[in-house]
Image (cartoon, rainbow, N blue to C red; front, side, top):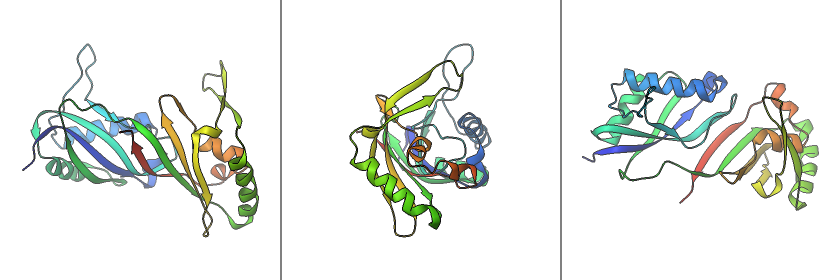
Length: 215
């Protein structure tokens, strides 16, 4: 039986849980770990926190089908046993997919890119296809990111951060976006460039189907 003090897990976040913020998801995970009696390690200092590291923050309203989180433990534990204990303590909407042992010296998970998708109504597909063709043929597309504190807006070129995009035959828009410390673009910003950002206000939602880690 494999034993590990660091475990990398892949999980899905679906249903109503997509409406929770990343901060609330982190608190939910802490509660799950306590309920499952997982021997999780804690940080040092005046406000110790469980050593739980997500590869990529989960945006409010976005479902995730293949997310990544690392958990550091205080004692060796079998990854599959850990996954089973978490599954038994998890609320509806959290599904545990994989668990693998890591070396004690392993670095925290670093994202390289992520895949997103959203269904496009038939009446909007031709317009999106035309806008997408223009975007993919362009070498640069400057967008403005508005900061929540409203103190400073940031302009950046999103085109190099859009690694791939397509509209499938069934009307699903799929995009692969760079997600690394040296640059990233939000899926909502891509939708705005394509003129379909309003779909999110009308009830459609994004799904992050995969998070790829840097080697």
